[in-house]
Image (cartoon, rainbow over all chains, first blue to last red):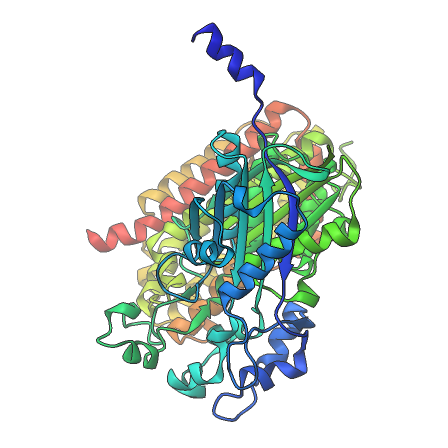
Length: 383
Length: 236
C-alpha cells in the first residue's frame, strides 16, 4: 500500500448521520369501531375474529388512505412524497443535491417500475442513484443500510430514505368476496386485516453531522429463510394443495378467485419471530456489537407484550433484557404500517422524547415474511 | 453446600448469564435444524400424515426407553460434594422412567401394533444420541449434562406446546393419541427455577460453561439426526 493511500485511509473516517426525519399519516385516526365501516363487511356480515385479533395486537387507532367508498384518497406515492417533503422541509439541504434515493414499500401503486422511480419523479430530484428494496417490514432496514453504505463508501454525501405502505387496499371487503367470501376466509387470511394500516416515513442521511442528529453506529440483519417456511405472504391460493402462484393462473381474475391475491399470515409460525428476534440480539451481544446496558431507548416494530412469559424471564436472567421504561412505541396509536413503521416511530420519538446528546437508540425490525430480523443502533450527537 | 437445595438464584453470575445466552442460541439453532428435518417440515407445511406420526413414535421409542438409563447414570456420577445436583436429577429420573409406556399406548391409539413398536431397533441417529448421552453421563460429576437436559427438556416443551395439537389437527387423531407429546409440557416456573439454579451451581468456570454448551450442541445435532433418519428409512 502506498504511503499516500494509507494517509487517505486514516484521514477520512466515513460516517453517516440521520439529520432529518419526516412522517405522513393519511386522514384522521380511525378507531377500532370505525375500521369495518371503512374496510367493509365481507358479504355484509361483521367479522367474528376482529375483536379477538385487535385485543391481541393492542392497536387503538390507525390511518387509512382509502375512504368508506373504497376510493384511494392518497396513493402510496402521494404518502411517500408527503413524508419525504416533510423531512426535506426541515433540513437546509437543497433537495436537488441529494445523491441517493433509497426507497422501500411492500407494494407500490404500480407493479413495475420500482417504487423508487415513482418517488423520484414525485419529488422531482435529478440524477440520484436509485434503490428500491423489495420485501416486507425489513425492507426499510435494507433501504437504510444501502443508503448508509453509499455514504460510508464515500460515493455520496447525502441519501434520502423513503418508505411508504398502503395496505388498506388489500383489505377491502370486495377482495375477500372475490376470493370466495366468508366460506374461504380463515384466521390466517383475516389476521392482517386487523393489524396493518397506511403511512409513510422518511429519513435524510448525510456523511457529516448537522445540528443535533443521530450517528449511525451500525445496522445488521439476520435472515432465516433457509430454515423456516413462508409466514406472511401474497401469491398462493387458499387451497394448499394447489402449488401454483398467482401468475401461473390463466387470468388474474382466476388467481383472485382462488385466493392467490389475499394477504395471509401463518399465525402458527409467528412464535418464531420473537425467538429469532432474541436470537439476533444474542448474536450481536456475543460479538460485542450490542451492549444492552448501554441502550437508553429501544424502538421496536413489535409490541412488548409479545416478549412476555418464559422468554422475558430468560432475557432478564441472562442480562439481555431492556427495561420497559426504555421502550418507545407508537404502534398503538399510529398502527402497524409495515416497513414504514420504524421510520414513523423514530420521527415521533425524536419530536416527543428529544433524547439527550450521547443517548443510544436501538431499533429492531422483525419481519415475519420468511423471517428476517434487522437491528439498527444510533447515538445522538451534536455538531 | 451439599446439603443445600438447588433453587432459583436472585441473579446469575456473569459467567452464568453468558452460559444462558449461549444455551438460548443453541436452542434457537436446534429449532433451525428441526425446521429442516423432513418430517418436521411436513408438520410446518401441513402435509404431515397419520403414518408420519406412527413413524415418529416408532423412532422416538428406543431413545425414550433408554432415557431413564442415562438420567440415572448421570445422577449416580455426581459425588457427595454434588449431592444437591444429584437430588434434582434423581427426581427427574423418577418422573420420566416409565413414560415410554405412554408413548406405546399412543402408538396403539393411532392404529399401530404394540409388538411392532416394542421390537423397533434404534435408528443410526438414536444409536449415536444414546451412545453419547451414556458416555457423558458416565463421566465423574458430569456438569455438562445440563446442556443435554436443556435441549431434551426444551424439546419436551415444544412437543407439548406446538407438535401435539398440530399433529391432532393434521392427522385427525384425538388427544388420547398424543399423551406422550403432551406429557412433557410441565415446564412451569419451578422447572425453570431449577434450571437457573443448576446453571448457577455448575457454571463456575469457563471450562464448565464450555462443556455445558458443547454438550447441548452435540445433543441437538444428534437429536436432529435421529429425526432425519425417519425419512432415510423411507427412502431405503
